[in-house]
Image (cartoon, rainbow, N blue to C red; front, top):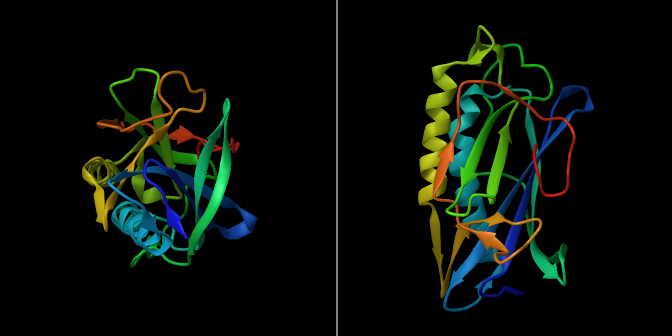
Length: 207
């Protein structure tokens, strides 16, 4: 199958933790360029993007974290809401991603949060990264060892554009309550040294 020009692609990254805990990160991309892209080309581009993110952070992530899979499909806007579109592919690995921190993990739900913004004030994406270990925490604040890596992640994400035959793939912020814009392209990112907390899973949003 192929993914069409202007299609929204959703990648759901699932991690498993001890004690039956689970983490999901959901990413959205838009297909640009002049033509369609094959499922394999899209999956390869998504994996490359995700490797920039998680291979950067894995040195500080709890080494008991395992990647379950990455499910990739399209997202369709129908009348006034989004629906899951066609299945694209499933990844069993993300590059050389290998969590490597053997320290005590932070409590479940405690995350490093990064905001992705665009020229439209109400269009914002948030990504909650976890699980990190106690080495990234000092006096209830995130240490520079992690904030420095988050800065590298932001640079990689904002500059990433995968060139695939006749098209390209770029990170997108999907507007869940669409007005004039169904999606926007982020152009800057914000993160600080305070921990965020995210436990409840909402459709397309959060951890």
